[in-house]
Length: 449
Ligand code: UD1
Ligand code: CA
Image (cartoon, rainbow, N blue to C red; front, side, top):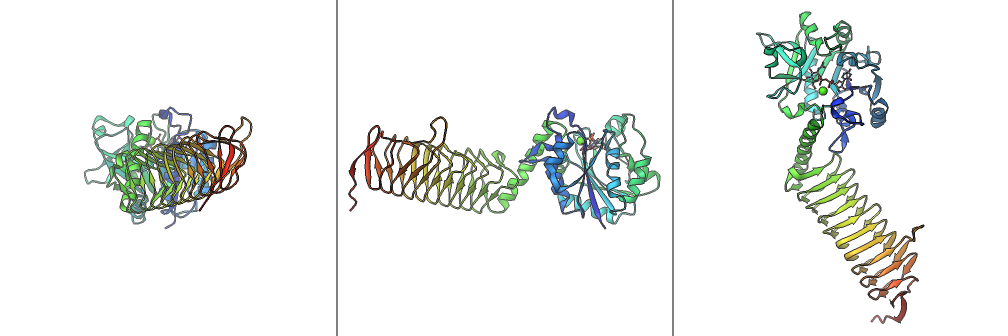
């Protein structure tokens, strides 16, 4: 049967106390609504319909063409919200899968079971329930003596007896489409002045039809985010799931509790990740690396066999067998070729370090290219900025830059040249030449046997 999903995202999210619409708050690096869309993607047939209202423009922009949008002008409740999708969907689908954008942990597997259960249901609704000790303000699932679902009662309207019920409405349903559109017109106004989607359950039962309930095996999937406390619970749940998937694919995570890996990050086999490591954005890490402890890597690609200790890497590219840290900072455009070694307190920005370059201690390299096997002495600085403009530095292969050298750009240093300790180099240096002093001058041609 054809199934299309409706994702509710119009609510204000007042309890988040935020300027950002609730559904755009990230969980493991992606907005909650991204997770909601991901969950329905392979379970439904057409483009999902997202009901927007509060922060509509921002939500629309974040989602892009992954969905169609309908607007709920007034927040008149979840039933009213679903009704806004009718004009887009009437006659277009057999089943409607309804979820909310604030339930980032629901899995495609669960939603598939929900749809399959409804496919063989003679009645018009299959709903998802969870058994939990903490009711969290969720609607209670009222069952009859024979165990069949009779109604969903919202907490505000529940009797003390109903409040004690521990089976809760998760807020994900699969409906027979034709029945749904008609039923929504019969939903009464609640005492709170809203039209509750949950009242459709009572309507179906009154008409003598069966409402099926599917109970979650893993209650963690039911996390609905209303506050930032819930947001941190969702984050923790998703983090466990992400880390587990990496471990099952061959990555050692020494302490998953303190390892933070965002959605979409890839890590190769036999890589070991130590505690306090944060891997973000489009980061890709190869096989057999040692990452961390205490390392932050954003939007960076790393080859195989690299060691990255206690460092911060942003938008960098690192080839194979590179070793660095502690306390390296790579910034945008840093490209470290195979076999580079960087020791402590090195910063590299918009520069290429050729194969086997060594940069052991306290250096800044910006807007530079450095040839293979060159040694950058302790305290070397590329003076790439004169207060107005940035200038490039080119250093050849096999060069030896002495300790505490200032390289005043623009500058070219030829292959196999050397600078003396404390040199301030303001003019280009020819290959095989030693320069010393302030400002540096050539004192001899180097004799290479
Ligand atoms: C709802 C259910 C409750 C369930 C709980 C699970 C109803 C009446 N109650 O309660 O049984 O246990 O979810 O989390 O449905 N929304 C709109 N437009 C509106 C109102 C809400 O789009 O006018 C959206 C919200 O953005 C949110 C979702 O619908 O994504 C749920 O709304 P919310 O107000 O959070 O409902 P709950 O009180 O949590
Ligand atoms: Ca909610």
